[in-house]
Amino acid sequence: MEGDAEAAAPVNAGRGPARDCANAEVIRRLLESLRLQDHETTATMLHPQVEARGRKGWFSGVDQVVDWARPSADGHLVSRVEVDEVREVGDRHVAVAARRQWRWRESDELADEAEFGVLFELRDGRVYRWRQDFETIVDAIDAVEAT
Image: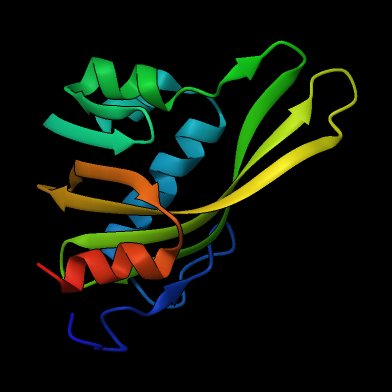
């Protein structure tokens, strides 16, 4: 943790790991299942006692977290998350840099975009804590180092 470059080595999301990172691989598979809206696979990747936090508060248990993680639609807009970086932090955390995009349903044209950071904590090879309330990946990494 404490600034350990090896522990926080970047992983190229979607293009293979920069090194063999088991936790980062779990998160890449989770992100892919979310992108494909494969809720069954997503559920299997979550620890039975999973807790998630986003802008709308805390969610507990597999069913609540899977429901919370589904893409949103607001009238003519549909949300999508683009992942820019996946980074292992220590031996049980993975931080992600991402962008939430709102696109027009009819044309898929970008209407709005906002960057954010995510922090996953893994236990027994599954996501145990999922915090999606950071402004950046740096803020997510700093949260690990502060504990």
